[in-house]
Length: 259
Ligand SMILES: *Cc1c(COP(=O)(O)O)cnc(C)c1O
Image (tube, rainbow, N blue to C red; front, side, top):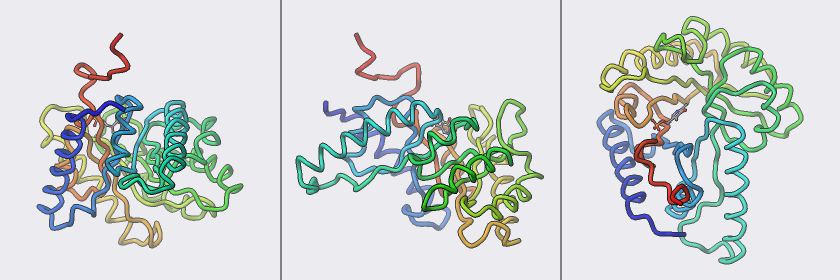
């Protein structure tokens, strides 16, 4: 594994910005979970973050998620054998988050590998997950994606439909609604994302106060590289950050891509 000082620095800078935004809102840094989005990362970069103690990673495509989860699994096992579990920083396990659009025919494949599905956007998808989850010991935890930016290209249920979908999911035995996810609009100025995040937070609080999603309805996943601080100010407790840590697609310095 090649040491990549700048990756560590960028990771720590993002953590510091999250902590500052959390404190600004009167929370502790630990109240906000950073999901590192690895779609621009090399496998070595993911390993380096794991060695720094990071556990939560997100992928937007099922195939990539499965591939990376398998590679990382192997890496963890090898390390455990080499160090008899005593490597200082290495976490016990890595948690994968499915953050992108999930097709119903991929549900079965991804179920055993993910800690949280962020992107449930229809009753049919929820039902598919329920059927597949019925064969498992533990309920599958998920978020409902809400389209609060109003952009037609974005997936997610309409704001007015979110509460009812949560209600329906809550009646299904083997899946558990944990909260909401939304994406900010694609804009340069992160402040322009604020109304989108505020709207999502409002829907989240409405559902909570109506006690629709049950006691464990407590996750609000919003904010990416460009707008995570604004999202935290608006109540996010999971942020999904990729390019601020790994570099933008244009400036990506993935060593494995260099011939
Ligand atoms: C890619 C992606 C992210 C991370 O975006 P960055 O701008 O690279 O931080 C977050 N959420 C979803 C759903 C994504 O697809």
